[in-house]
Amino acid sequence: MSPIGVERRERPVDPLQKPGEEEAGPKRPDVGAPDKENLLKRMRKVDPKQAERYRQRTGE
Amino acid sequence: MLDRIVGIETEYGLLVHHDTSLRAPERIAHRLRDHIFHEQRLGLIDLHHRDYDEPVGNGGFLLNAGRAYVDMGHLEYASPECSTLADLVAYDRAGDVIVQRALEDAGLAEEASIIKNNVDYETDATFGSHENYLVRRSFPFDREGLDRLVPFLVTRQVFAGAGRVGAAHVPSGLVTIGEPSARPQVSFQISQRADHIVNEFFQWIQANRAIINTRDEPLADPERFRRIHLLLGDSNLCEVATALKIGTTSLVLQLIEDGASPKGMALLDPVGALRAVSRDSTRQWLIELADGTAASALDIQMEYARAARAAYAGRNDEIDWVLDEWERVIEDLRGDYRRLVGRVDWASKLWLLETFREAEGCGWDDPWMKSLDLEYHNLNLSKGLYFALGEEGRVPRFTTDGAVDLAVENPPRNTRAFGRGEAIRHLMKSQTPYVITWSGLLIEGRPPFRMPDPFTTYAQAINAHLGT
Image 1 (cartoon, rainbow over the protein chains, first blue to last red):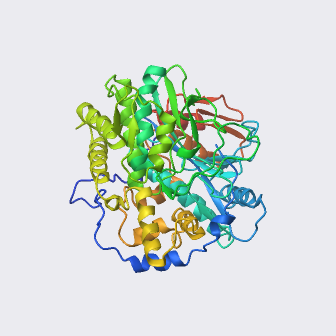
Image 2 (cartoon, rainbow over the protein chains, first blue to last red; image 1 turned 90 degrees about the vertical axis):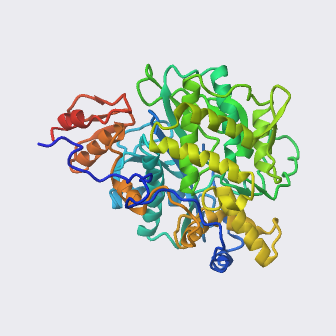
Image 3 (cartoon, rainbow over the protein chains, first blue to last red; image 1 turned 45 degrees about the horizontal axis):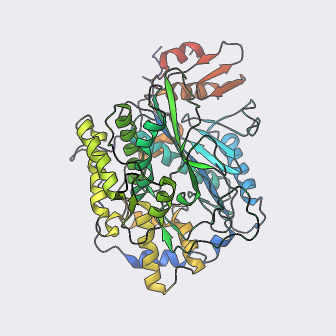
């Protein structure tokens, strides 16, 4: 019987792999020209009054 | 990362679209909790009464060894114990995925939206994102030790704040007699929780939230460990902000444990400074120190960053990432805030709102601004404005969708969470009654199984205990 821990090898990947490896780590964002029109289109779909309906209990 | 266990607890908000009754969000929270445990079978519901407000069936542990439960009417997720930033961010995001998938799978996506934020704008309710850091019992948990932590915590909002439109009206006492004072006139501030923190140190939570919560509940061997519980932070969506918040705070705790934290940084009025920094639209963020001088929040952060670099540079890749990104963010904040879009939530939100204001000619007092603020935090990928930024390639990731998917149903492999996850997986196949807690479990017909050390996986021991 194999010990627990040997059977499942999947785990979240390391985001800090070195350049050239399969997954690149965090990068600085491109602060160049974003597509504002797509974002504005999505924002215009937001119900202007929805915040008035958002009433929550105070938590911890 | 460092030799430390960390975790995040998130209370989610629920925007109910048609039912306007006050209890509607709570009803949806209960339905989601039931769907997660009874329909999707993502964990084991509690069979025992945990506390006076946690009756049988109120929540349970998940296959990933975290918890989902209803607390104060909110659906809440507590991540499992993590020892790396890679795991911490993946398991924090896994909580978002678990609750959003439950909403969609239960057919409730048209009825409600899940909002990962910390305030509502109508009643000034607040709900938390709580951070947990395991420290050694010898941590100087006294006035001198905690005073070293406070200047860092007050100023870290410059990169950890989620931002909000307006300000909360928080009474200065428990009961307001007579007419309430006017709501503060603030267009936009960088923190959601700053308005709600009214004390430096306190052990309880509601109505007296403190910069440092002093409750002594280690959820581990109390002779070896203490759990630093912080409730002043905002829920982050930017993965870089989450990693930086937890990573820098871990490093500062380590500096204090090692007696290497910067000196001479005590603030004259920490609670006042927390609020003033959050609301400072000039982003000068000047703070009066106890010695009568003044320093900017960025300079205070840089003092901590330099001390951490001197002490810990080169220890491992995660620490080096934190040190590099910490200094980079501070330097970027000295210039145009738009350099932080995608990495810092308040900057991302402010840029979106300013873009909208410019296009539509809205004033900050337009109700639409608060509604857009809310939509930034919507966990629906096709609606949430944070995710819209991601679609435009504006958001650097710290984890991957694949890692998050794994974290939904699998525990971290190198902490106590692993043993708990194995027990849950085993118990889900049997009909044996159980009691599961953070620090142990009890299975009917067997002796108690204790897990007092969060750094131990208990892999072999739990295997023997379960007879598998």
